[in-house]
Image (cartoon, rainbow, N blue to C red):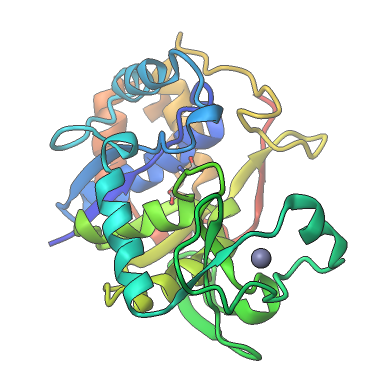
Length: 292
Ligand code: GLU
Ligand code: ZN
Protein backbone atom coordinates (compact mmCIF):
# COMPACT_ATOMS: atom_id res chain seq x y z
CA UNK A 1 0.00 0.00 0.00
CA UNK A 2 1.30 3.40 -1.03
CA UNK A 3 1.42 5.99 1.77
CA UNK A 4 2.67 9.43 0.82
CA UNK A 5 2.75 12.69 2.70
CA UNK A 6 3.16 16.43 2.46
CA UNK A 7 5.13 17.87 5.36
CA UNK A 8 5.23 21.67 5.30
CA UNK A 9 6.88 23.76 8.01
CA UNK A 10 4.57 26.57 9.16
CA UNK A 11 7.26 29.21 8.81
CA UNK A 12 5.18 31.26 6.40
CA UNK A 13 2.36 31.09 3.91
CA UNK A 14 2.37 28.45 1.20
CA UNK A 15 3.93 29.80 -2.01
CA UNK A 16 3.89 28.56 -5.59
CA UNK A 17 6.96 26.35 -5.06
CA UNK A 18 5.47 24.54 -2.09
CA UNK A 19 2.16 24.18 -3.94
CA UNK A 20 4.07 22.57 -6.82
CA UNK A 21 5.56 20.02 -4.43
CA UNK A 22 2.21 19.40 -2.77
CA UNK A 23 0.56 18.86 -6.16
CA UNK A 24 3.26 16.42 -7.30
CA UNK A 25 3.11 14.48 -4.06
CA UNK A 26 -0.71 14.41 -4.13
CA UNK A 27 -0.85 13.25 -7.79
CA UNK A 28 1.75 10.56 -7.17
CA UNK A 29 -0.26 9.19 -4.22
CA UNK A 30 -3.66 9.44 -5.92
CA UNK A 31 -2.40 7.88 -9.16
CA UNK A 32 -1.17 4.92 -7.09
CA UNK A 33 -4.51 4.81 -5.23
CA UNK A 34 -2.54 5.45 -2.09
CA UNK A 35 -3.04 7.55 0.98
CA UNK A 36 -1.79 11.10 1.26
CA UNK A 37 -1.08 12.35 4.77
CA UNK A 38 -0.53 15.89 5.95
CA UNK A 39 2.05 16.52 8.63
CA UNK A 40 2.78 19.97 10.00
CA UNK A 41 6.48 20.19 10.82
CA UNK A 42 6.24 22.67 13.66
CA UNK A 43 9.12 21.33 15.73
CA UNK A 44 11.39 24.35 15.32
CA UNK A 45 9.16 26.54 17.46
CA UNK A 46 11.14 29.81 17.19
CA UNK A 47 10.65 29.79 13.40
CA UNK A 48 6.90 29.23 13.41
CA UNK A 49 4.77 32.03 12.09
CA UNK A 50 1.35 32.80 13.53
CA UNK A 51 -1.46 31.86 11.20
CA UNK A 52 0.75 29.84 8.84
CA UNK A 53 -0.89 26.50 9.68
CA UNK A 54 -4.35 27.84 8.91
CA UNK A 55 -3.07 29.37 5.70
CA UNK A 56 -1.50 26.08 4.57
CA UNK A 57 -4.62 24.02 5.31
CA UNK A 58 -6.84 26.58 3.64
CA UNK A 59 -4.61 26.76 0.55
CA UNK A 60 -4.53 23.00 0.06
CA UNK A 61 -8.32 22.87 0.28
CA UNK A 62 -8.66 25.81 -2.06
CA UNK A 63 -6.72 23.92 -4.74
CA UNK A 64 -8.63 20.70 -4.08
CA UNK A 65 -5.70 18.85 -2.54
CA UNK A 66 -7.51 16.99 0.22
CA UNK A 67 -5.57 14.78 2.60
CA UNK A 68 -6.44 11.53 4.37
CA UNK A 69 -6.68 10.98 8.12
CA UNK A 70 -6.10 13.63 10.73
CA UNK A 71 -3.41 16.25 10.31
CA UNK A 72 -0.41 15.38 12.49
CA UNK A 73 1.72 17.94 14.27
CA UNK A 74 5.34 17.32 15.13
CA UNK A 75 5.03 19.52 18.21
CA UNK A 76 2.76 16.82 19.66
CA UNK A 77 5.07 13.94 18.84
CA UNK A 78 8.22 14.76 20.81
CA UNK A 79 7.87 11.57 22.92
CA UNK A 80 8.59 9.52 19.78
CA UNK A 81 11.68 11.55 18.98
CA UNK A 82 12.90 11.08 22.54
CA UNK A 83 12.37 7.31 22.25
CA UNK A 84 14.42 7.19 19.06
CA UNK A 85 17.18 9.23 20.67
CA UNK A 86 17.17 6.81 23.64
CA UNK A 87 17.54 3.86 21.28
CA UNK A 88 20.50 5.52 19.56
CA UNK A 89 22.02 6.37 22.94
CA UNK A 90 21.62 2.75 24.01
CA UNK A 91 23.32 1.60 20.79
CA UNK A 92 26.13 4.08 21.49
CA UNK A 93 25.58 5.74 18.15
CA UNK A 94 25.30 9.28 19.48
CA UNK A 95 27.47 11.52 21.58
CA UNK A 96 26.92 14.77 23.45
CA UNK A 97 28.54 17.77 21.88
CA UNK A 98 29.29 20.78 24.04
CA UNK A 99 31.00 22.83 21.33
CA UNK A 100 29.74 26.38 21.09
CA UNK A 101 28.95 27.99 17.78
CA UNK A 102 32.23 29.93 17.85
CA UNK A 103 34.26 26.82 18.72
CA UNK A 104 32.72 25.07 15.73
CA UNK A 105 33.48 28.05 13.51
CA UNK A 106 37.10 28.06 14.70
CA UNK A 107 37.72 24.55 13.34
CA UNK A 108 37.45 26.13 9.90
CA UNK A 109 35.72 22.99 8.61
CA UNK A 110 32.16 22.66 7.40
CA UNK A 111 32.31 19.05 8.54
CA UNK A 112 32.17 18.31 12.24
CA UNK A 113 35.65 17.22 13.25
CA UNK A 114 34.65 14.85 16.02
CA UNK A 115 36.00 16.72 19.05
CA UNK A 116 33.29 15.48 21.47
CA UNK A 117 32.99 11.92 20.20
CA UNK A 118 34.17 10.44 23.47
CA UNK A 119 31.33 12.10 25.42
CA UNK A 120 28.91 9.21 25.15
CA UNK A 121 27.14 9.83 28.48
CA UNK A 122 24.20 12.22 28.49
CA UNK A 123 25.19 15.80 29.23
CA UNK A 124 22.84 18.69 29.94
CA UNK A 125 23.08 21.77 27.70
CA UNK A 126 24.66 19.69 24.98
CA UNK A 127 23.64 18.76 21.46
CA UNK A 128 23.29 15.09 20.54
CA UNK A 129 25.12 14.18 17.33
CA UNK A 130 25.00 10.96 15.37
CA UNK A 131 28.48 9.47 15.00
CA UNK A 132 29.02 8.99 11.27
CA UNK A 133 31.68 6.37 10.43
CA UNK A 134 34.97 7.90 9.20
CA UNK A 135 36.62 8.05 6.74
CA UNK A 136 33.77 6.86 4.57
CA UNK A 137 30.04 6.40 4.80
CA UNK A 138 28.78 6.20 1.25
CA UNK A 139 25.02 6.24 0.81
CA UNK A 140 23.47 5.37 -2.51
CA UNK A 141 19.85 5.74 -3.52
CA UNK A 142 17.79 5.97 -6.63
CA UNK A 143 15.70 9.13 -6.84
CA UNK A 144 12.46 8.98 -8.82
CA UNK A 145 13.32 12.21 -10.65
CA UNK A 146 17.08 12.68 -10.33
CA UNK A 147 18.13 9.02 -10.74
CA UNK A 148 21.14 7.42 -9.06
CA UNK A 149 22.54 9.50 -6.20
CA UNK A 150 25.70 8.99 -4.21
CA UNK A 151 26.80 10.88 -1.15
CA UNK A 152 29.53 10.09 1.30
CA UNK A 153 28.14 11.78 4.39
CA UNK A 154 31.44 11.43 6.26
CA UNK A 155 32.86 13.86 3.67
CA UNK A 156 29.88 16.17 3.23
CA UNK A 157 28.50 16.65 6.75
CA UNK A 158 30.14 14.33 9.28
CA UNK A 159 28.51 13.78 12.68
CA UNK A 160 25.22 15.64 12.39
CA UNK A 161 22.93 16.91 15.16
CA UNK A 162 19.74 15.13 16.20
CA UNK A 163 19.02 17.24 19.24
CA UNK A 164 19.99 20.86 19.71
CA UNK A 165 21.50 22.61 22.68
CA UNK A 166 18.32 24.69 22.92
CA UNK A 167 16.40 21.43 23.59
CA UNK A 168 14.82 21.07 20.15
CA UNK A 169 14.86 17.82 18.20
CA UNK A 170 16.27 18.45 14.75
CA UNK A 171 14.42 18.16 11.47
CA UNK A 172 16.57 15.14 10.49
CA UNK A 173 15.49 13.13 13.51
CA UNK A 174 11.84 14.18 13.52
CA UNK A 175 11.29 13.57 9.81
CA UNK A 176 12.91 10.13 9.87
CA UNK A 177 10.94 9.02 12.94
CA UNK A 178 7.63 10.31 11.57
CA UNK A 179 8.10 8.86 8.10
CA UNK A 180 8.82 5.47 9.69
CA UNK A 181 6.07 5.49 12.33
CA UNK A 182 3.48 6.73 9.83
CA UNK A 183 4.49 3.96 7.42
CA UNK A 184 5.39 6.39 4.61
CA UNK A 185 6.41 4.40 1.52
CA UNK A 186 6.91 7.27 -0.95
CA UNK A 187 8.30 10.73 -0.34
CA UNK A 188 7.83 13.42 -2.95
CA UNK A 189 9.31 16.73 -1.82
CA UNK A 190 11.34 19.74 -2.90
CA UNK A 191 14.79 19.33 -4.46
CA UNK A 192 16.20 21.58 -1.74
CA UNK A 193 16.08 18.41 0.38
CA UNK A 194 17.91 16.17 -2.09
CA UNK A 195 21.14 16.64 -0.16
CA UNK A 196 19.44 15.78 3.15
CA UNK A 197 18.33 12.37 1.91
CA UNK A 198 21.60 10.49 2.41
CA UNK A 199 21.69 11.59 6.05
CA UNK A 200 18.11 10.47 6.53
CA UNK A 201 18.80 7.08 4.95
CA UNK A 202 21.79 6.57 7.20
CA UNK A 203 19.69 7.45 10.24
CA UNK A 204 16.97 5.03 9.10
CA UNK A 205 19.58 2.26 9.05
CA UNK A 206 20.75 3.14 12.57
CA UNK A 207 17.15 2.83 13.77
CA UNK A 208 16.34 -0.31 11.74
CA UNK A 209 13.71 1.52 9.71
CA UNK A 210 12.80 0.85 6.10
CA UNK A 211 13.86 3.45 3.52
CA UNK A 212 10.98 4.98 1.53
CA UNK A 213 11.20 5.71 -2.18
CA UNK A 214 12.30 9.32 -2.73
CA UNK A 215 11.44 11.68 -5.58
CA UNK A 216 12.58 15.28 -5.52
CA UNK A 217 10.75 18.02 -7.35
CA UNK A 218 12.70 20.91 -8.91
CA UNK A 219 12.40 24.30 -7.28
CA UNK A 220 10.76 27.26 -8.92
CA UNK A 221 12.88 30.34 -9.44
CA UNK A 222 12.10 33.71 -10.98
CA UNK A 223 13.75 34.69 -14.26
CA UNK A 224 16.20 36.71 -12.14
CA UNK A 225 17.24 33.41 -10.63
CA UNK A 226 15.72 34.15 -7.25
CA UNK A 227 14.46 31.21 -5.30
CA UNK A 228 10.81 31.36 -4.33
CA UNK A 229 10.75 30.74 -0.66
CA UNK A 230 8.96 31.83 2.42
CA UNK A 231 12.26 33.32 3.63
CA UNK A 232 12.77 35.55 0.58
CA UNK A 233 9.20 36.77 0.93
CA UNK A 234 7.83 35.06 -2.18
CA UNK A 235 4.55 36.42 -3.39
CA UNK A 236 1.64 34.79 -1.66
CA UNK A 237 -0.49 32.49 -3.79
CA UNK A 238 -3.04 34.12 -5.99
CA UNK A 239 -6.30 32.47 -5.06
CA UNK A 240 -8.42 34.04 -7.75
CA UNK A 241 -7.99 31.40 -10.42
CA UNK A 242 -7.06 27.98 -9.01
CA UNK A 243 -7.68 26.26 -12.37
CA UNK A 244 -5.12 28.43 -14.16
CA UNK A 245 -2.58 27.91 -11.37
CA UNK A 246 -3.02 24.12 -11.31
CA UNK A 247 -2.74 23.96 -15.08
CA UNK A 248 0.43 26.05 -15.02
CA UNK A 249 1.96 23.81 -12.35
CA UNK A 250 1.18 20.70 -14.39
CA UNK A 251 3.01 22.31 -17.32
CA UNK A 252 6.02 22.95 -15.08
CA UNK A 253 5.86 19.30 -13.96
CA UNK A 254 6.19 18.19 -17.59
CA UNK A 255 2.75 16.57 -17.64
CA UNK A 256 1.63 18.29 -20.88
CA UNK A 257 -1.94 19.16 -19.95
CA UNK A 258 -4.04 20.09 -23.02
CA UNK A 259 -4.55 23.86 -23.40
CA UNK A 260 -8.36 23.92 -23.07
CA UNK A 261 -8.07 22.12 -19.72
CA UNK A 262 -7.01 25.37 -18.03
CA UNK A 263 -10.57 26.67 -18.34
CA UNK A 264 -12.12 23.64 -16.67
CA UNK A 265 -13.06 23.25 -13.01
CA UNK A 266 -10.19 22.45 -10.68
CA UNK A 267 -11.73 19.03 -9.89
CA UNK A 268 -11.57 18.13 -13.59
CA UNK A 269 -7.98 19.31 -13.85
CA UNK A 270 -7.01 17.19 -10.87
CA UNK A 271 -8.80 14.15 -12.26
CA UNK A 272 -6.97 14.63 -15.56
CA UNK A 273 -3.70 14.95 -13.62
CA UNK A 274 -4.23 11.69 -11.74
CA UNK A 275 -5.15 9.79 -14.91
CA UNK A 276 -2.17 11.09 -16.84
CA UNK A 277 0.37 11.29 -14.04
CA UNK A 278 3.87 10.31 -15.14
CA UNK A 279 6.66 10.96 -12.66
CA UNK A 280 9.27 10.26 -15.32
CA UNK A 281 8.13 13.36 -17.24
CA UNK A 282 9.23 15.70 -14.47
CA UNK A 283 12.32 17.54 -15.70
CA UNK A 284 15.41 16.66 -13.65
CA UNK A 285 16.63 20.19 -13.47
CA UNK A 286 17.12 21.95 -10.20
CA UNK A 287 15.29 25.03 -11.37
CA UNK A 288 12.03 25.74 -13.12
CA UNK A 289 11.61 29.32 -14.20
CA UNK A 290 8.42 31.26 -13.81
CA UNK A 291 7.54 34.88 -13.34
CA UNK A 292 3.96 34.61 -12.33
N1 GLU B 1 9.21 20.47 6.51
C1 GLU B 1 10.12 20.51 5.42
C2 GLU B 1 9.99 21.81 4.66
O1 GLU B 1 8.94 22.44 4.69
C3 GLU B 1 9.89 19.38 4.43
C4 GLU B 1 10.21 18.07 5.03
C5 GLU B 1 10.19 16.91 4.06
O2 GLU B 1 9.39 16.90 3.12
O3 GLU B 1 10.98 16.00 4.29
O4 GLU B 1 10.94 22.22 4.04
ZN1 ZN C 1 31.49 19.05 19.99
